[in-house]
Structure formats: structure tokens, C-alpha cells
Length: 262
Length: 262
Image 1 (cartoon, rainbow over the protein chains, first blue to last red):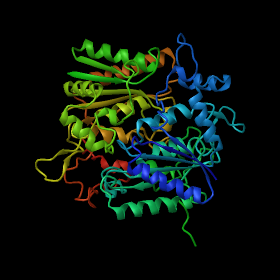
Image 2: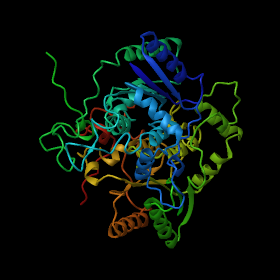
Image 3: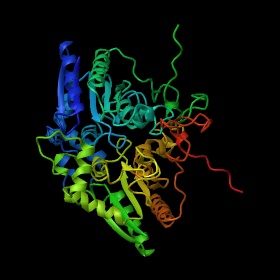
Image 4: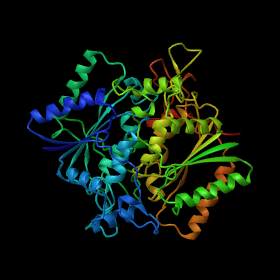
């Protein structure tokens, strides 16, 4: 497998960075090829602006159309193109980050904002459905798997289905469903390391072992079975049909229920 | 009222910026005092790093402790202090942004990441509960109201309770519950303007009127009634007690059900 590992932590002495090195060692030993985008080390610019697209200052910036035009014209900023080239080569995309305010650090959010542009990651016309775009299960990044690896300061109880912080898969829904799945990638269940500010050596060993095991399994693990846009579960207005997910509410309604095994 | 309005759009000719001017006009005419943080115009730096805290390069960066220490020592970066001063003066905080990848643009996420630091916005000791911090309903920003004003490219159906994109209040849960409510602010239901890329003049007038009406009402509107940490709904592990929200699952379980009026 080719892997793109995107890392977002300001300190190479952090828990996040230590786990990153464990992950690279595991994947490399298994014969995979890994490219790394260490966003802090790269001094990645996370801020979308007209300069990304070579757009003139006298025309109003419509981010979607301007980015698509720049992609077609070859005027996209070279730092964005370089990340798209890495994505193009990847079978698995890993985003690793500390959970800040229940989401990605700004430097990583801005990697998504700037790299996943219209006409590249999304808004590709569906040849079978005129007027529709490929998304939610298919799109510009179809065929790739995606894994979020998250360190969390809080205790795991807070992130249980009835924990005060909200279930992690709900908090990360904008990333797992709205970004990975939206662009056609297959989102794996995230790897979460809790109590990240209070780890003993033993805790660290357990976290590293869990991460390594999840990476060993990443090419065959079952993705989160979100419902696809064109699978028949949504009506023409893109609302779940009344006979679908009758026993589920909220964000969980967008996950297919798997039949019990055996 | 004193209002801090934080704006995150790269173009002053955008729909977002036009609605921003409508909002300022409405609030000013009503006699309120408004301060604006126009993040793009300010060239706001959204990236947390050791330089924020005046920390030495030879010590490992632990973001929480380092930021709290810098706050105590007065070595916090002046741009962060300036935003905290604006927050301190505000009765209402408005965050206005286009929804990018179902969340805030990086420049705004990094405003939260850098400004809402430990010891200022959160992790203040609870005098009544030794070993506990003030959060979820109380905290460093208690007494303020908070309003998200969001422009959304997609159609509103996608954001209905069973729409394919997920309900907007679920997608924004990390901001409304995990940031506003976590730090003690009272989160108002967000103002959402859909189909933002395809607006007629009439659509624009309707959107501006809705925003103005919501702002007129902002000092007395009912906040989203999230359950407070110390209100008795959560057990010691911070999990909802079994007899609470028995009829609700997912993120909605953290919202109190209001009794019918009359």
C-alpha cells in the first residue's frame, strides 16, 4: 500500500509525534510505502485566499468556482498541487491530530480546506445522473481508505454514547462522513487514545500496540458503513426515506445496520 | 449590549460580508456597541505554536499547561491578549462564517484554538467541587451569549433531521456545545442561510431580514437548553444517568426537553 500520513502537532517531543513514529515503523516494516506531510514542520499555510488560485484582485472570490478554474488552468498554488499529488498516490490516508475543541487543529482543517477543492475532491459530475455530482460514497478520492488517529485529553467515559462530551464518531462526523465519505473515501473507525495528558509508560505501550494493530489491519478492516447517496436510502431531496432507519435517530441514522453474523 | 463579531471570509464582496454589514447596521441602530474581529483583514494567525506563550525551545510544548503559565506570567502573545480583551467586554459573541467541510474555516478554528486557552476559557477550578473544573454551563466565559451565523452552499433539506448531510445543530455540536457551552456561554440556535451560492435578490432580502430579526432578539432569545455538568443529569463519570433522556439517543440526549407551554 501507499500511505499518506498527515500529522498536525507543534512539537516533535509530543505523544502525538511519538505515536506517529510508531505508526511509520509498523507500516514500513510491513513493506508499505509511506509519505508524510508534517504540517507544522512544513509551515503549512492553512488559510484559503485568492492567492491559492492565481485569481485577480478585482474579481469577487467565489471559492468553489475559482478553485475549480485554477485546477483546470494549472494556476493552483504549488503547495496545494503537491498535496494533491501525494493524495493521488495514496491507497490509505491517515490524519493524525490532538483533538482541540472537539475537532481538528486549525492547521489540519486548513489542509482540508485548501487541498480538497471543487473539481478535484468533490463536485465531479455523475455520468449516470445528469445534474448530480458524485459524493457520499463516490467522488474524486474514491478507492482510497481514510483513518483518523486522535489523541484526546479527556477520559474515555465522556465520549461514550451517553457521555457528556458526545460520542467520538458523532463529534467527528464532519470529518468521517462529511469529508472522507463525501469525497468517496472509505472511512475506517477512528483510533482514539484518551487521557493523553496523563499517560504512564504502560499506558503508552498499550496505546502504541493498539495503533500498530489497527494499522496492520487497515487494508482489510471494515469501514464505517455509511449509506451511499445513490444506494436507494435517500429520496430525491436527499432525505432518508420513511422506511429506512426507522429505529434510529440523529447521525446514527446515516449508518447502515449490519446484519448479525452467523 | 456589547457585541464582539468575529468574521471569517476572504472577500469583502461576499454574501457573508454583505450580511455582516446588515448585522452591524441593525445592532448599531439599536444602540448596541459592536467590536469586529475581521480575521482575514487582520491577517489573523490561526496556528498554535510555542511562540504563543513565550516558551523556550528546549522544553517540550504541553499546550494546556504552557498557555496557562503564559497567561499567569503575562507572556501571552499580544494578538491573543487583544482578542481576550474584546471577549471580556462582550455580552454577546457572534461567529460568522461560511460552512466549509461542515465546520469553521481554518482561520476561525484557529481563533478558538489560540484564544480560548486553559485558565482563561476553561479549566478554572470549581470552588464548590474540589478537583473539578467549571465547564458545560459555567466557565471562563460565563454570562455571555454566543451566536453562530452560517452561510451554507447546500440546500436546507440536506440539513434536516433526516437529511443526508446531518442536522446543522449536530454538525455544529463541537462549536455550540463543545466550545460555547463548555466555556460557560449560552449558545443561541444558529442562524443558517442555505443555498448561499445561488441567491436571487429576493432570497438575499429574506436572509438579511431573518438575520436582523434574530439579532434584535439576541439579548432575550432562549438558548439551546443543553444539560449542565452539575445539574444532576450526569453521574460521577460524566455519563447521563439511566433515568435521564430515556427517549433520546445521540447528541440530542444532551438537550433538555422543555415542558410544553400552558
